Length: 497
Image (cartoon, rainbow, N blue to C red; front, side, top):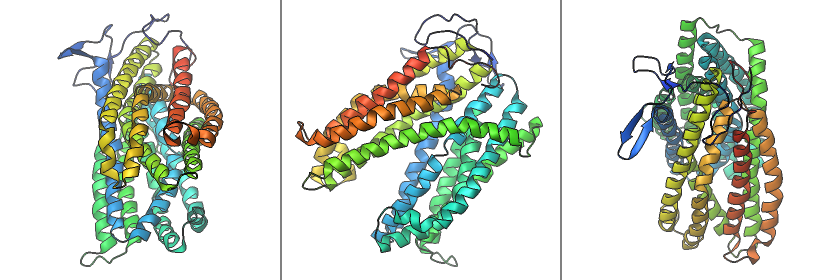
C-alpha cells in the first residue's frame, strides 16, 4: 500500500496511472480496459464520457432504490392511519426508535462497499466475496443481541418520548413485533454493500421494489384481515413488515452466497475478518452519530425558538416539513455518493490514482449540477409546496423563506454528499469521524446561541436558524471534505487500507 500525490480539481497527477474505462458489454460490469482517454458520446451539446456512463449505471438504480422505501413507508402510514390517530402516533414513535437503531448501522453497507470494491479492483474477487461474507456475519453479531435488548426495553424506549398511555400502548405493540426485523434489516444493509462493491446497484433496486410492494400488501391483509386472515390491527402492520424484510434479506443474502460459492469463498464465520469489519465500522459509526447529533441539535434549537411564538406548533411543523423535503432531495445527491463509494474503492484497489482523481472530479461536477437543478426546482416550487403538505396558511407562509435558503445551499450539499461518498469508498472513515466531531463542536453552540436571540432578527427565528444550518453545518462539512480531497493522504492504494 502507498499514497500517491495528485490534486483534485483539474491538476495533473504526479503519480503514474492509467484511466480505467468500462469494458465492452460482454464483460462483467466491474471489468476495465486500458484506455488513456474516456470515449465520449455526444448527447445534444453535452458530452458523456465512459466515467459518466458508469456513474449513471450505478447512481440511477441507487436513487430509485433510495426513493422506493420512503414512498412505500407513506403507504404503511396510510394503512395504519385509517385505524385511528392513536395508532398512527404510536407508529410514528416506534418507527423513530426502529429507524434510529438501524440507521446507526449504516456502516454495514458503507464499509462493506468500500472493502469489497477495493478487493475487486485489485483483481481478488474471491477475497472480495470473503470480505462480504464477513460483513454479513457482523450484521448477525450486531443484530441478534440488539434485538434481544431492545425487546426487553420496549416499554422504556417508548415511554422516553413522553406520549400518553393510549399512544404508548400502540407504539409498544408495534415495536415488539417490528424489532424482529432488525437482524434482517442489518443483513440487507450488509448484502447491499457487498453488491454495490461488486458494482451492482440493480439487484438491490429489484429487491427493494418487490419487498416494499409485498410489505404494503401484507400490511393491508394483516391490519384489516381478509377472509381467513385475522385482523391484527397495528401489530399486523409490524408483522407484515417483518415478513417482507425477512424475504428481502433472504433474497439479497442468497445472491451473495451464490457468488461466494462460485468463487470458492468460505461461508463460515471468520473471526479476524469480522473483527476487521467491526473496526472499520467504528469510525463510520462515529461519523453517523455526529450527523444525527447535528440534526437533533438543529431541531432542539427550533423548539427553543418556538417557545416564544403564540403558536409553538407553527415553526416546529414548518421545520419538520422543510427537513422532510431536504431529506428527499438528498436522495438525488446521495445516489451519486453511492456510486462514488463503489468506483473510488475499485480504482484505489487497482492502484490507479489518476483514475480515482479523474472520476472524483467528474462526480463532483455532477454533484454541483444535481445541486443546482434541485436548488432551482426547490426555489421555484417553494410557494406551492406547502399546499401539498398542510392546510395551515401560517405554516405555508413560514415554509417559503426556509425553502429558499435550503435551495441556495443545494449546490454545496451536492459537493458535500459526493466527497463524503468518495472518502468512504477510499476507506477514510477515521478522518470523516474526526471531521464530523469538529463540525459538530463548532455548529452546536452557534445554532443554540442563534436560537436564543433569533426572534429579535428580521423575518423571525426559523429562517435564520436554517441559514446557520446551511452556512455553518453544511459549510463546515464542505470545507473539511474539500480540504481532505485536495490532499494526498486519502489516496491509499491496494487491496486493503
